[in-house]
Image (cartoon, rainbow, N blue to C red; front, side, top):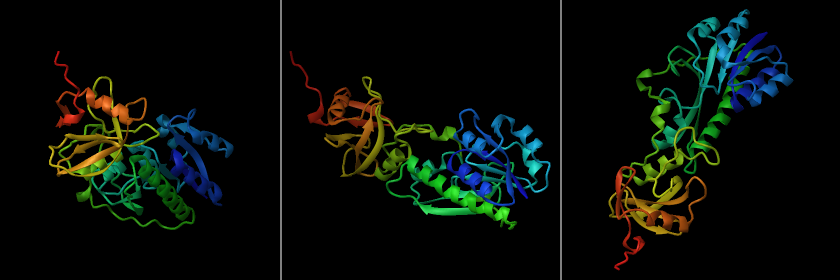
Length: 325
């Protein structure tokens, strides 16, 4: 018999529970979640007779359920940092699902950073848990392309799907008694991304057009709230414009940050590489920015104003009329 304590939520945790429940010779001692009264997994666990506990009690729960040799701890889609005394209880038999490529993308919101950094490929990783975050030996990794249309939400969703499959495969290996192959991480290539590093929603218009478009789509979690930022323009006359999608708009000699034009599709804004982007999807917190709303937004801008970090010039034909009386 192989015993498991599972931590987590969502698809990866569900996949782990399903794999253990379906396998002969395996059982789930406890499920640890964020908030048992609000967790979607609590009902699932209850139907299968699995005890559910709050993550705040992880130490006491694990002390209670680690009385048998060979017990495993599986962290499946939880940001909980496992206390050292809990890791000691499992003696190397603790695994973490990380929705990112290790060692290059350790920490939080790494899928957003991969888009922002212009990566064309990403990965999910399962590794042994050590005291240093996301630094233990890798026991499984799956790579997949980042699509041009991926947003922060869609790439994260694809990470969860890939992670669920990878975790199910590794749990099945454990249950069959197969040894996991450890691949030590090259920690000289490690970069740790922290939550606070991903909260700045200001656009650097000195960036390339592709870089600005990637920044915008990485923060797009519609129809849900982003866990970090949504790219924005300056708040003018009550407008709090959030940008969700942009496309290439051709070459321009205008200074970075200049609103070159406002067409029916949205404004054309110059970037730092001599190219412009067209904002084709945005909202003001209440509704989608229509051509009329864009005209209204532009009409409130002074002739020259800082937009994010760069100067913006309103096209002559979009400037508000001046009354000479």
